[in-house]
Image 1 (cartoon, rainbow, N blue to C red):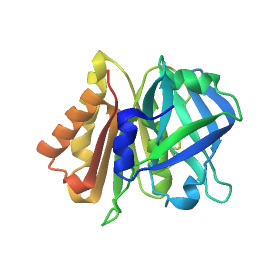
Image 2 (image 1 turned 120 degrees about the vertical axis):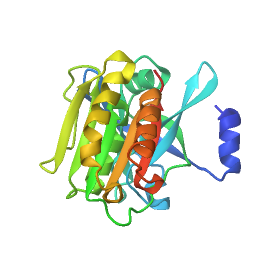
Image 3 (image 1 turned 45 degrees about the vertical axis):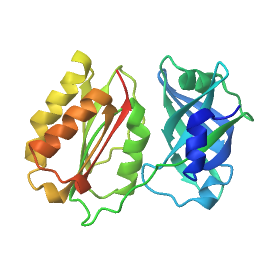
Image 4 (image 1 turned 90 degrees about the vertical axis):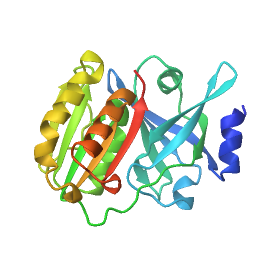
Length: 237
């Protein structure tokens, strides 16, 4: 299966293609699944960075369909890593539940990156949900001694694999009112925590509408500089 016009554009942009092979699967919770892979040479060729992600290509009735996923626990020496899937109705989710060890999937790497934070943040301020949990955990792993406040939107009672430690304040917010509960909670808490905008790093990765609302609030109301925050819509409601 080719990658269609998206793949052609990525190729023109000098994206790199790899083939990953599934080596195992673990059902973490009812709604969360981890697959392990051999990396097809990716970790030997490209430098690692926090929140590093890849595009996986799925077959949608003969048409290419790509989705981005964060690399979990990369091991360059073994050429292996994991990818975690928040399960819901969809092509990628269905694939993660049916694929068998030994099967392969095509992947493309382009657009991933993480700029060094200078000066280093005194606190991380993170907004995420099950879809972005691997990236949240990657960020926490990259700054193990840095205090962090994490607002995490939940959709069920799953005990997800959070990597929060004694340095981290994890605030679970049940999803309600089309994401407004999360937005309101962060808007309420954030001013006290982001008093000195130059000393924090604000990272947002949740549903598109919520991401936009919180980005606008941080920039317009709290004057958090662009280079001290990152915002991305991980899915659309």
